[in-house]
Length: 111
Image 1 (cartoon, one colour):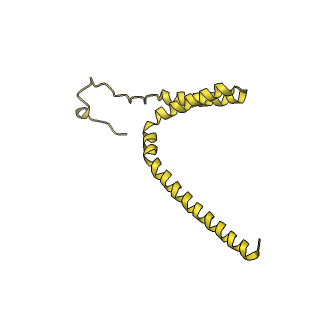
Image 2 (cartoon, helix red, strand yellow; image 1 turned 90 degrees about the vertical axis):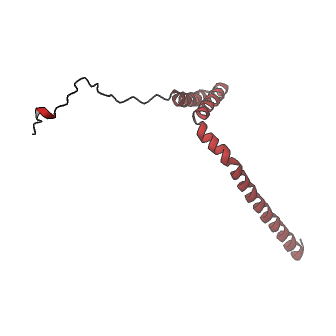
Image 3 (cartoon, one colour; image 1 turned 180 degrees about the vertical axis):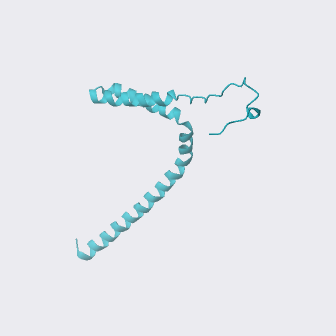
């Protein structure tokens, strides 16, 4: 065990210890979660309209809380829609080719 010499002791004894600041409570997130849980409970009890209203409220609160994420999604959504549209055009072309081949085979067979 070491002993600190008196010359090494701090000279300022009036210093106030700094306590860590507590994290702020995110009430919006808790409200959204509680409202969505209440919506599920209302749905289980058979109150469909009240459950729908609670679910819409909880979803709205969650969307308000996650605004930055929604902005990013909104920005990338047109790209995804364009990709899906191209994929559907390819699928449509393939289905048309299959239909044409079926037609040709039906003519050859005589059906």
